Length: 336
Image (cartoon, rainbow, N blue to C red; front, side):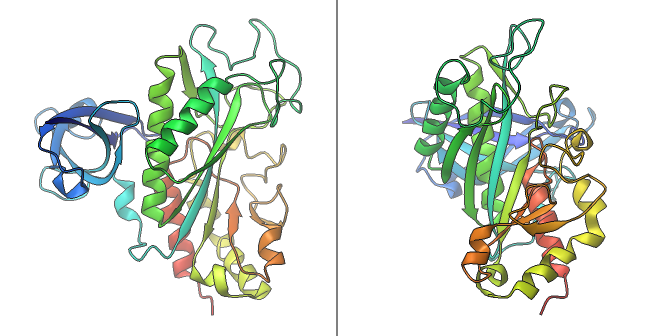
């Protein structure tokens, strides 16, 4: 029996990479990652190689059943150079969390755009909808736009076996969010990219496209972020306010390093307004949605055992780069 394997990778565009994919048809596939062969592609077409030495390799790292195709799987891959070394665009390889000590929950916000009008769903031609406020978690056709599309995407993610945790409409018309959680930084990145792939592919039959830009519409609107909720064994078990404060303080000296990988055009979103901290500042606080890092009230109620939420990552950020930077900051901090 023939099986379709959709190999998915990130290209070499910088700073915002794009997803690419192509289909490999194989016979007698056993459904395991180990049975997925290494494949190659033309890196000169994706800004990952030159024309005189164009071959790059695709190394399978995660596999999921394809919920839309018959006898098919989605294969997330890392990009390697022709000699088998990691390509410079391969951020997944920079994550140092081999024991899956770090758990991540990403909140992916995005705008659903109408391909004809080039505007978010619910935006009238030549004007603006009502001000933000009535769209968040709304019900009904006056303020809710795109629910059928979003519900179908949720079903696809669940049927693909992703640890998909929820959906909601956000504060602007046509703006939505989904949440994913995984135990392991690499796995969290894998699942978010697969969810994005399913989202983008689904737009093809609706006449939509997804805008991950953190501030696609100028004006008095919240931007789109990808809040990163994270923990490790220390945060999950310490039971110490002092330890949490030390972890938060470890982020203060490396603000620029974090912002550098938290997404392009993030300065348009992190203004100090609309529940954001200024891109140049650093702060943290319990339940503070205007802080750089929020300490969830549940963490406090559980006796300082839980997680933290970095609210700075933008909606177009790479979860591999974001997770790698967070892991590095905490792992290198002097916290006892």
